[in-house]
View 1: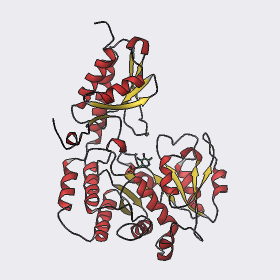
View 2: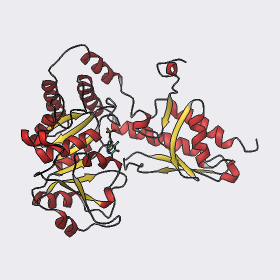
View 3: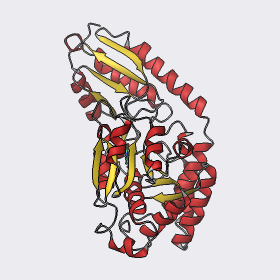
Length: 375
Ligand SMILES: *Cc1c(COP(=O)(O)O)cnc(C)c1O
């Protein structure tokens, strides 16, 4: 079956992995693509559209204000810039030169990850607190100085038990007049997270539009304090600030608004029940194959409340180890992406599959794992 991808020689992938950027994030529902197509047919004042869309998204998500970025990582850059330079035109023009400006960001050592490069790209120094295993309140108190521009929190799979509770992190930062930025890029579901972190007191929270929100892949949300969101708009396009290269188009602005509306209206309980059913059916079927153990695993790798099936293999019995299975599935027809987990196991993730694809995944995984078994 030819499509716009196969005509380019690019193979579509059945995604039992996750809302990974490198696989295309998520698939926009027709409500979103229709809104984008309509937006593409008219000229409009981009700054006015950003404001109008932001107001609407803020209302829908119970936040003071909202800004559409070109992704969560871009949101981290713009939010950092807004916390440092605010709405001061001279400071906005001066960035990324931080001479005379606050230039430090307090962060849990345990939260360091590839995406904090977005925060660092504004030129700040990350001041780490705690260890991989434990962080104490006094360590955060001691790390905050008159140079501290913001306190940065990542909510993800690595957010751990040894961290300060987010409530404490916010309390300590605010006691020193320091704003808190939360990277919650992949923290949907649950939908309530769109307002949970800001209601806890976080000043700005960033979400990816191209993950479970099912918005345009190159979109993101910054939600939070009105004055800081207003500053974000001054740093971003169409203005010439540090975030001008991270352009957000009219189609993305309208598309992510449609995605937020669509997402809020989803039957989240029904969706969760379908995911449980898919995982249960996968496990029941795969457990019938000798040398294979499949079990429900929860939450998923990003800490989202979505179940996955963890499949563990006895390579001697199956004739393949888990890494070989993952590779063969990806190189198969259709190409199926699953979650690698070393030589012994892999995961099947239900929440990025289209209706009916769970059967395709099961057929191909079963056939591969049972191939060496005596008939
Ligand atoms: C995916 C992700 C990002 C980046 O999101 P984009 O919308 O792709 O820019 C940032 N932080 C975390 C924790 C993520 O999972």
